[in-house]
Amino acid sequence: MRSEISFIDLRSDTVTRPTPEMRRAMAEAEVGDDVYGEDPTVNRLQETAADMLGFEAALFVPTGSMGNQVALAVHTRPGEEVVCDADSHILHYEMAAMAALSGLLPRVLRTADGFPDAQQVTDAIQPDIGYLARTGLVSLENSHNRGGGAVMEVEKQREVQKAAHSKGVPVHLDGARIFNAAAALGVDVREVAKGFDSVMFCLSKGLGAPVGSLLCGSTDFIKEARRVRKRFGGGMRQAGVLAAPGLIALERMTGRLIEDHDRARRIAGALVRLPGIQFASMPRTNILVFTVGPEWFEDEMPEDGNFAGRFVAHLKENGILALALDKNKVRMVTHYDLPEDVVERTIMAVSRV
Image (cartoon, rainbow, N blue to C red; front, side, top):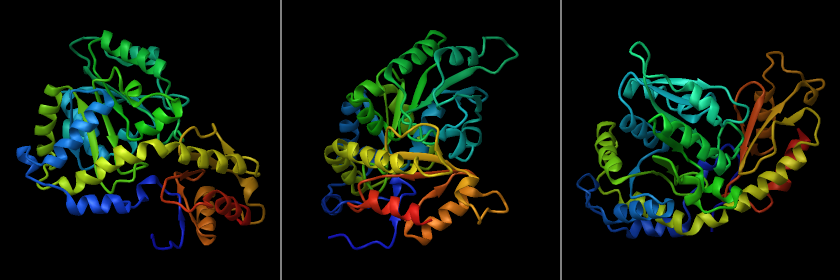
């Protein structure tokens, strides 16, 4: 049995704890030295991930950020540009690593929903002229974190891929929550991954594993990615104890993500009826992002204009943890490690606020 928790934690799906089955798998995992490629559990996880997404090979990395940055480094050369959305994870939450580690510059695109279209990508790719930086990579994100868990349609992905490939530019997918995207679209995850030169996805979010991500690509790409992982400090030894819960995540947890999506929609459906709360779009996956306006506060207007911060602080007083993205935006994320009555208790707490 899980111990009772004091708060309902909706800050992220990264707060999930490993299941009892995952803990047993960790304790019983067969291990070896992964730097030498000799950890059988890691190898099995990599093979399973590659097969599920339709790639030749995969590489186990400690974090999604490392997976993204390894991909950027393999695809590009220093001094090149990476085309990405203005709200993308690689731009906001990866510590300027593309510049610090690989000497890359983002070519930022402003989009309505986090997803550039083919024409935007075509226009952003630099012509091959001696006084311009080359475009080394196009990076997409599906589902989109700061976009409120928005999902990019497969057809739109194909159009962007075609536009980039026609210019000789590879395309990477930050698919941290790719299984959420597939569930929302009602397609096999291979369809979401298809056509990309590399895909990264996380085990430690909605899938519930305690650590780790996978980077998928061709055999040659992954061979070079292994070298870059080591350069970035990501070489692991007896990592089978970390890979074992990842296998459980892929085998047991992908099919239940639709439950998290349903909870997110139910919470959003109640919140949107309250004064001062607005959604740019209703959630399709497990992430809710909404703005809190002055109408919410009546007599307690925050003097500093930090509506989201005050809202989140009040929620915490009522037993709910959420995340303020800025002075106006709040994020909530549903996941498996929540009580059955999370929807009702969240709505009740917000109503008390």
